[in-house]
Image 1 (tube, one colour):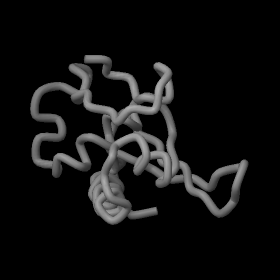
Image 2 (image 1 turned 135 degrees about the vertical axis):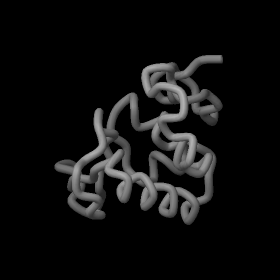
Image 3 (image 1 turned 60 degrees about the horizontal axis):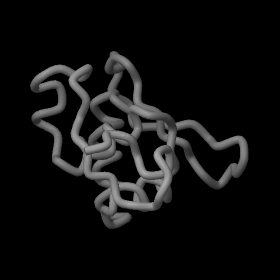
Image 4 (image 1 turned 180 degrees about the horizontal axis):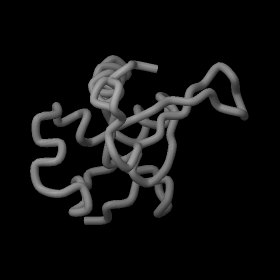
Length: 103
């Protein structure tokens, strides 16, 4: 099974991979499965909410909820998109942040 999101390997299929071994066993085990899926997608680079919905196959509300979990844990940060100021890009971070502020 190809661990890359569909946009990077060609085709527009839903991503069905798993978290990589670099996250270590149990790294995100207590996160909801939807949050684990988004974290794996974001490990390949920043994505907008719309991109995450399209690539994960999850409903928009589920993606918002999963992103909230990831932001609270400090596993993901969001920045304004330079292409479209109405969009926010979500980035996976290498190590959780000290403060758990939601951006």
